[in-house]
Image (cartoon, rainbow, N blue to C red; front, side, top):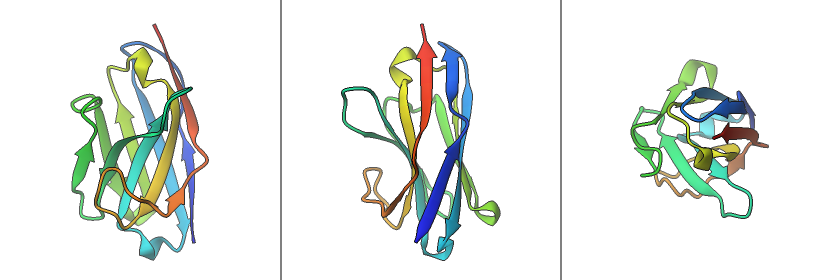
Length: 120
């Protein structure tokens, strides 16, 4: 099994930046793809970005050009740099890990989530 722990969420004004981190532990040898997803109140979970072990990335149209996903394989950590944040970026952000190469997964492991709130 893989355990994922997110950090870095918080409250930020529109136009600001945040950097999320997610550390994986356990059976990390089984991980190919890591990703970030978010869920706003009353909405379905949305896939935001994924990155393969080789560094190939994919983004949702809504964050393209503003968010950057990166990965440190030696530290089993994935990051999400979020710039030019908008109120509609508010939600709980979840880290995922698995073998899927698709933005929408499926992914076998999920973190508990970290809250991101963007004020207008």
